[in-house]
Length: 371
Ligand SMILES: NC(=O)C1=CN([C@@H]2O[C@H](COP(=O)(O)OP(=O)(O)OC[C@H]3O[C@@H](n4cnc5c(N)ncnc54)[C@H](O)[C@@H]3O)[C@@H](O)[C@H]2O)C=CC1
Ligand SMILES: CC(C)CC(=O)C(=O)O
Ligand SMILES: [Mg+2]
Image 1 (cartoon, protein in one colour):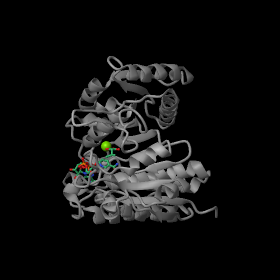
Image 2 (cartoon, protein in one colour):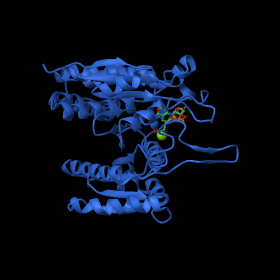
Image 3 (cartoon, helix red, strand yellow):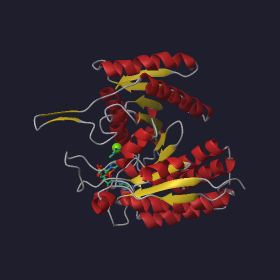
Image 4 (spheres, helix red, strand yellow):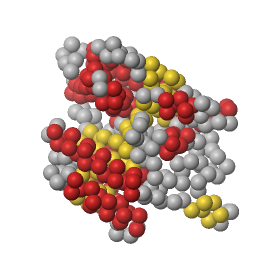
């Protein structure tokens, strides 16, 4: 047995708590079945609830503990009722992205059988893309640390859109490597640079760096789309999208849109990867409209947990974590195919608890290869 890997666990607010609990159960079961060493969890309190109680958006030593762990798992943070004086919400997770340089926001979007695609076209069953969202700068730069916005009294407010060469080079290389991996798995492996290079110098710079990096990967086909047209294509023919790389705010918006195409935010997993650590969280928020009702779909969180296990496998060079990730992904595939996963989110009869139990059964099922 190798050393025990530690996860900083930030459940956060609202349904973030429920989907984190579900993820820990499913991840632990998959690790046990894969014969992997169990994980150790260091639970850190952070979010709007923490701020309302203590005046701090994260426990005093929370950031340092998060950085010391092998990976961070986060449920969701924020409640519209708890705000700073400037009107913005409590968002310590943006500071974590900034502090730990979590530039690569990986947001896979995939259609599962029996999960209703929102488009009637049968080709929608083939939706399988990754939105790669830069996650530390872009138009979120001012928000990365609260107080960075330029507030000029009550007359004008400016936020900054920042694109740096260093981060953008890393982001585009990440996109091409992701496309290579997808190509190995039979996907098209094509990278599209999504920007607004027709009007913003920052975006023209983003595209220029894309053009500089692309020749390092001559076997990967490339394309460009302006973000407005990309929104149209995502609604009209989302099955054509493969790897889409873009600035922070564009990725925030388009990843929710894409999640909606395959059932809703409860299907939208996310990994935020930096050079030293990774943060894994569903792309959704705390869903105040369904808090405390056992209605949250835990799949986005559980699939983010599988992304975390893949990351840990690479980081620790221990294939048993990758086997556990494959078990979870296989359980979700098989569970949908057999109609054993029926989230309330899109009309099914299963709330968070029932979905978690069904996932545990699918992970344990004899017909799922242990990888
Ligand atoms: N990364 C994070 O922690 C994020 C936090 N937020 C915060 O969350 C709060 C709510 O934000 P919203 O804009 O309402 O976005 P949201 O993602 O929480 O909810 C949008 C819609 O999707 C539904 N939904 C989301 N996740 C679901 C799930 N797992 N199962 C079933 N339905 C689900 C909600 O019920 C709601 O109708 C705000 O305070 C916001 O700032 C929002 C997005 C990301
Ligand atoms: C701070 C979050 C509310 C931003 C967001 O919506 C996201 O990261 O997806
Ligand atoms: Mg978002």
